[in-house]
Structure formats: structure tokens, C-alpha cells
Length: 164
Image (cartoon, rainbow, N blue to C red):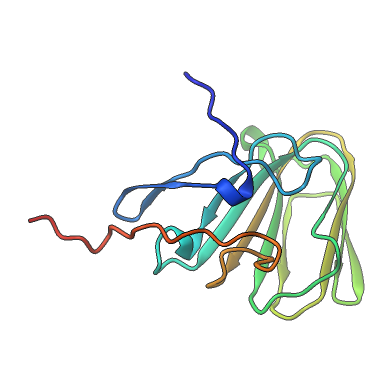
């Protein structure tokens, strides 16, 4: 099998394959220390009626994500889980600001971030075993930080096309 080319975020081009089916293409994280490819579904960039965006990364070493502390006009969920063979196994120490509190976890979890709540950075202090980081949000914005990441051209939505 040929190795997929890793694109930068501003060149990310997932492929709409079938009505409501999008092939995920690997891309390079905006975080320089995440060297493995990421996968991200871009919600309404790919399918205008879809407002769910999710990004998946494999974390292999200590890392700081999401700095500086910020907020969004939408809810967000951060999942920290073991690798696919053992989702329930989580061997890492992570801290994250959530409002005026520092949340500390060393177990598989998700962290719900309500809209307009100050949060981050998420600091991975120790990684015993690599784990999966998932960022999920329901938003009409393509990105958590649209001001710092280029907008993508719209991809033609094919779900409503009728065969003649």
C-alpha cells in the first residue's frame, strides 16, 4: 500500500466520495511536536449541512495544546483515550484549565467545555503509553481558531444531487 502524503492544515483536502461520505486524508498538526499524521473531519467545509468537526491525533510525548487560554462561541468536547486495541487503558498525566480550575486526569475521559468558557492550555505532563486525543465541536466555523488558520474553499456537496 502506498504511503499517504501528509499535508499541512491549509492544504487539507478530504474527499467527498459518496453522498454524505467523506474520505479522511492525513495532515500535519498545527502543533510541531505532534509528528504523526492527524485526521480531521471539517464539518460544513465538506458537507454544508454538517456542523460536527472532529480531529484525531496520536500523542506520544509530553505536549502543550491549545495555548493560549481562550474561549469559543460553541461547545467543545476533548476525548483522551487509550489506543484502539485498549481504549480503556490510559497511561498519561494531563492537566487542563477549565474556567478558573485546573483539571487533572490520568484516566480515559472526555472533558466538556461549554461555550464561552475560558480553557486551555491542555498540558500533557507524562506519556507512559501513546494515547488518542480527539477534539469535537458542533459549529458552523471550520476551525477552533478561524482567525489563525486559513479558510478552505467550499467543497461541492453531492448528497442532494439526483441521478438522471
